[in-house]
Length: 115
Image 1 (cartoon, rainbow, N blue to C red):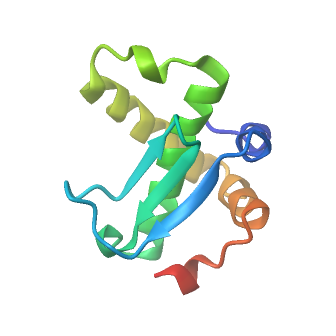
Image 2 (cartoon, rainbow, N blue to C red; image 1 turned 180 degrees about the vertical axis):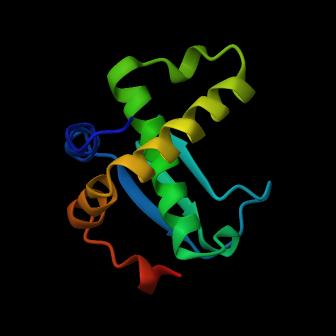
Image 3 (cartoon, rainbow, N blue to C red; image 1 turned 90 degrees about the vertical axis):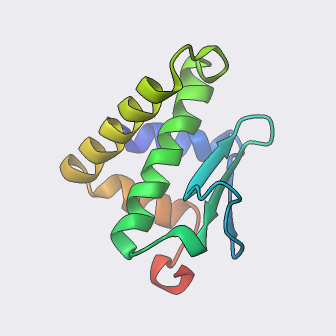
């Protein structure tokens, strides 16, 4: 599960957010680029506030994994990694609503305004 402490570390390490108004060429909702410390959210692909929340959590899990475990460069099965990331994001969403609140506060987000 993603924790508030991990979200704070991601923020402190300089990971920033970019909300793109253009769709991703491959239809992705979000993407984390470790070389740029950038989480990109592709707004045309986001279907609802819940979808935005899940996408943010998913990408923050990727950022956390890169910063804490430095394992994103050595993934052998991307499908399994993405599935594990989605499960972690879902568990975080279900068990700790304060994590998404921390993301909103640290990054000064009004997610309703982003959609």
